[in-house]
Length: 170
Image 1 (cartoon, rainbow, N blue to C red):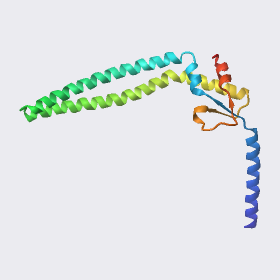
Image 2: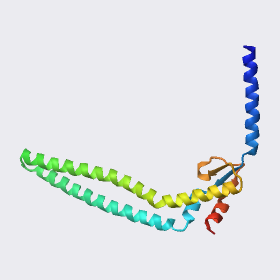
Image 3: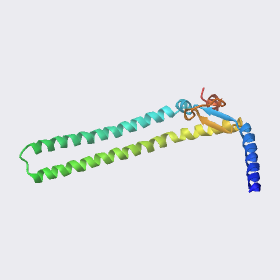
Image 4: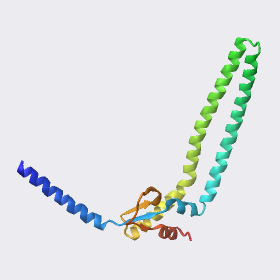
């Protein structure tokens, strides 16, 4: 038992020495990923294309919603009259199918919009990450964080300007 305690103590001291030595060698940096991304040439064009795509989807969704409202009003008018239950049932089924189609469209259009965003912005993200990696390796940084993801960054160097320069952004 004493030998086990002695072994664990030696192991703990060894780990402490290793991690202390490693922490002293680590070099931390941070970048403002969002601001660099906004300044990259072509990102504004990609954002505009994404906005246009979103507006197209919204227009189709609005047409479907308007059609649903019209059918809903027609159904309510028929229900207030002495309309047969068979006709009301048919109209109700049509209304439910239209509502389901509208829900499916909203869901699929959200997914399509996300895919379009990835498609349009991924090349810029890859280019930015490559520039961050290049700067980090050149200047021997162990870790580089996005400033928006860090709650605190006291002992960290701001590499935003170096990454902008690497990308040719002034």
